[in-house]
Length: 459
Image (cartoon, rainbow, N blue to C red):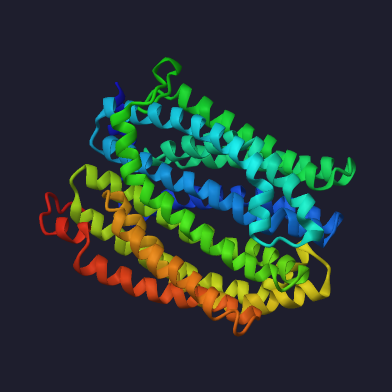
């Protein structure tokens, strides 16, 4: 029965390539948009109704730390997603079941560990980032409440990764829309009406994430396809977990190194004062529009490549990568123009402070024209991840982006401590890493080697 359902529904290995990529891309994009609205709504409401110190507490150092921790898990989950997509494309229902139940059990245990560590280490992490004293207490409070409810975040991300791996990108979107709207409503009630400030914003985020986790769990329980969740089958299969970690750990480690480099960037921004911290926090919300688009294309590339690789259609794999690359480049150029010319209106959503807005506009004008330099990194790493080629892309990212960025901040910034010296680390590392990725993908990658032994040329 499971195989019949899969054959009926799965168009990723059969349909028109660009169309299937876009049909998968848009739900992921909108889902990522609503996921970003969790913190964006907190930042908007707190910044407007409490003040710039509260804005810095919610979206400054705490935002970097939560992104780094959750990013590691999401990167690790790519290992499960790759295996599920390959098994699903190859119509191996038993292996899909092992992967689903092992990964969900692991996500709950990982969430429990993160809760304990996050609550106890919150003050130390914030001090290590040189968080300004005037926002330290609020930042600690927000971070502790966030970690107290992080299991819901991980449960949603694991369930959504499974659904997307089998080609279902719509239901994760619906769940996020519902939970995001509730998050915004709770922000208004708890922050504006009840005057709970940063605590109210944190509680709203945790509750809405728990809601999205509940919805994705129900979806997995009710499906009739081979990825159905059954409570009695939840367990940690050691061999399956080892496969997931082997594929996903490089992505998780890559995400952490990205996060650590951004933490160092945030520490440098923190040294410039509260106005710069608030401006950078606001810019990060506008900047997230680009990252939503490019990451959605990256996830689409991973799933498309994974399923077609599992089905043995290598010509289709290569064509899918080319289609993703072209569409992402066009999208990034359009977004650069949009953010560059109209970014000022976005800043006014977060703050009315003229000093903060002025600094933020300068950030936008400096960084947004360089977005296109990152496209190849995301698409090629996503495609290589789809065939299980994870370690070399991880090393390229860690060296080209993270190590070089940290070196720049540690060496160049102390000599010229200003906003532009700090921001230059982004285009510098994007260009260097793009060159490394193109050389590896075209001449040395696993995809290239396998591309010489096509088993199908169906397009």
